[in-house]
Length: 96
Image (cartoon, rainbow, N blue to C red; front, side):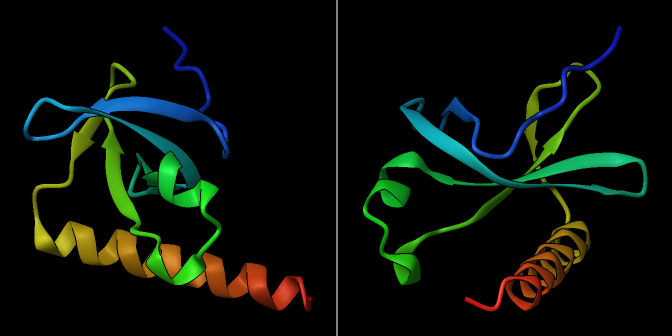
């Protein structure tokens, strides 16, 4: 089965730990050690366009294409720093 590619800007509904549905928008996708990860933020926060308040979350994409929490701090740190590098590169490529 071929997993559909997750596109940046796609909006997904996820359930938080209280089983409340939240809409999240994909900010970036990354592949690290053969695992795909996404950086997401709440769609509501992004609409407000207030950059400093945006919370970014990282989720792992499992074999079924479902989002899973990142369990280990080590894994989280790797994904987080990879995301930071990507953002720095984007800013460098876009001088505006």
